[in-house]
Image (cartoon, rainbow, N blue to C red; front, side, top):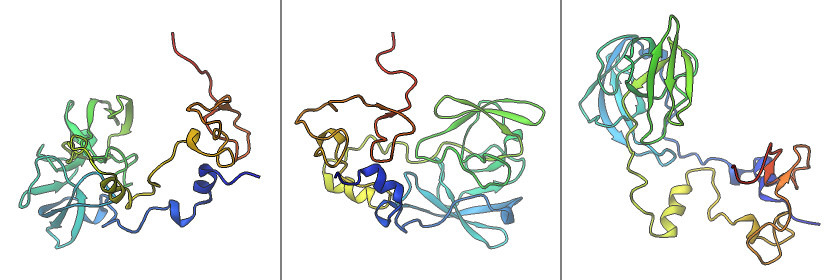
Length: 235
């Protein structure tokens, strides 16, 4: 009898495959801060995120964290209003952001606090406005239509050059992934023993069997290209 494969272990949801409690805070747009001005107090590193975060203080003395955009610095002022000045770091409704503007941390629906485009160096572009809808081009180049009352932050997420510096050592990559639900190092399926994975064994670098499987296969065999519509090279 074979061992439990990696997909089964992850699906079980044990502590090994959960995110560690290293989040500094949950970042979202708070309704308590609508219509207020804030000043940037500090810019911090968060081990569970790819981008830096900024600590801000609002006019009502509340302090909160937001995703830091490129070009922001300590002492800068930002606004969280439905409409206002087009300045980096300001949070506005999509309906009041001009076409062609770079934005990030977009709400999927009004009031959810920001869900999309939060990774380092990413940005979306406002394409067009309708009566109550706004079309935005996401980093994947997909055009998505949002409710115009959804909030977004003006600017590009900071930390875009993180891929330019190599890790050099395996230890540095291990420290990076300690704060995330990722097991490191990751062994390929074809490098495993035959009891550990359906693609294991054989002493070669290919699976040795078809990699397309049915969607109804049991968890121990549901690996590879699941319910693929087509395979092979496109011509």
